[in-house]
Amino acid sequence: MDVSKNIKLINLFCYHNQLIELDLSNNINLRNLYCYSNQLDELDVSKNIKLINLFCHYNQLTELDLIKNINLEFLYCYHNQLTELDLIKNINLITLHCGYNKLTKLNISNSISLIKLLCDNNQLKELDVSNNIKLKYENLHYDDNPWNENYTRIIFR
Image (tube, rainbow, N blue to C red; front, top):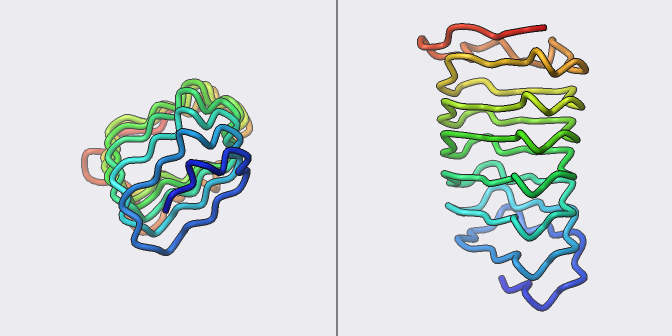
């Protein structure tokens, strides 16, 4: 799928395919990306600084660099192979669903707009949510054995 010439592209819906590659480097106006349920093992959204919605769940992603995506509000990256997720610059993030990965590190300390967090079935030993003052605790998703045996604590404010 070649969208390199679609420089005015704002919305891209390419979910439920067998995509193994997706080059978005020329799509600088992209705001909504729905590329879930594919075979992507990498996804570079560093040029997509206007991105608000990223739905990249059910892929094979091992890394996801969102440091330049400061406008991101909704991130659904569950069921991948992610081991680390640094959202230190994502202060506008409202919803994060990053469960069913291999996360050992999750930095949401500056995500002060975060309301909904689902991060079950990872390898987190600690999760600091003390700065996430808008977080609805009932959305932390504690049911169905969400934490493995190495999990130690959640730090609230």
